[in-house]
Image (cartoon, rainbow, N blue to C red; front, side, top):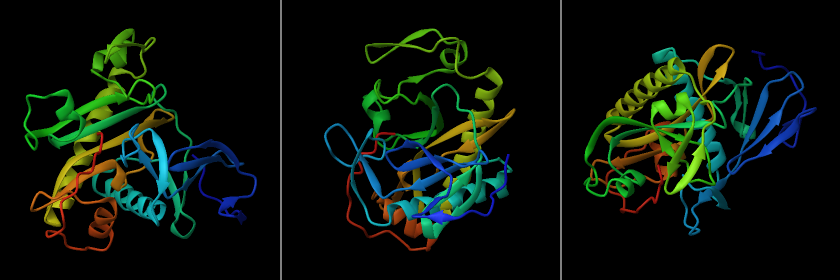
Length: 273
């Protein structure tokens, strides 16, 4: 892993960096010494109906300061996780003023896996389990989905991801080849997901807030599993003590600035975790 180095910044991007990918919420650059440079954007994501949705597969408009808030929350949580749990991340350096984060290059599991942990039943879980009542405790249930916008981020079990083969999700056949992750890597990501979620839930409990669910990504640096991407308000769902959903800027204010919530007007997030 390379350490962050001195560099000349022009328009927020280091000299010599080249664009790898323009993402929905971040642009990804490759640095001359092999590290990766992420530029957080103010874009919001929307679903196929055009309504704001943190799990949506399209960019649809912007929200002022959202990129900076997402970066500050990511820095806060990555540091908390590293300090309290000794779980490694790919973060190397952060520049809040430029909305940028330098990270180590990693290998993803296939095209990427998302690890979703649920304290209570909300969102897409209710759509897939219509006999479950909204808000039912799920005891930090972990679900794993393939990062695949076209197929709607299909959820499979450990055997499917480890052994591969063809599987059906919502009427579509998906080929996982020879598998995208080893059994040992899967178990470690699963354990990390549970540990991190309990840490974050406890952090919200101290703020008199009710944590509902969250999603993460992991990758590999050499033979080491590390937490990657971001943990921001768009990664999670949180309610106040009255059962009112907090908006992204509310979560930022609660975590970073210690603002108290409990009397806000109820709004439906539409989040698709």
